[in-house]
Image 1: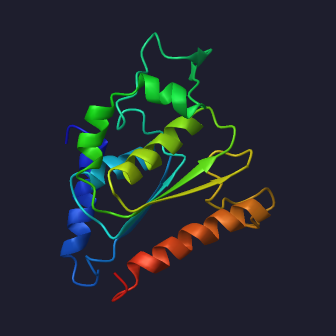
Image 2: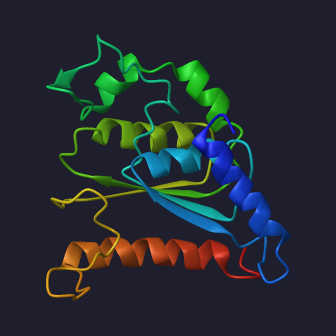
Length: 181
């Protein structure tokens, strides 16, 4: 495949062929570029639900990341949604967004250097009439809704991680349950 999202589409299509998988109840959750891959994939195929966590969707939204893009060192600085809007090609982005049929939960992170991109993806999906939900939390860790093992071996989430994880599991429960779509 030419794009990593093509690989993801191939995975979704393969899963739909398995006799023990309900092809109408496939969901995906991805962080950062993984979130952008979900958006790219569901613009070309449909799954039951997607959770885009801190979705670094600058390519999907056709946001300028070249030399004129705002940076601090090598890190893009797109915290402000209005700045992102100025640097995005809305016509190209909306052409992709209009093809999406999959409900998406976007989870942002306050003070993230790409927060404006996370918000704009949700805003333009809503503008296009898509089923898009927004949630945002304050947490120091990138990808915080996923619970990783701590030093000592425990998987104890902090209260914000638990809240974000519970939210995306409720979202999946709503869209993946057989007969609830």
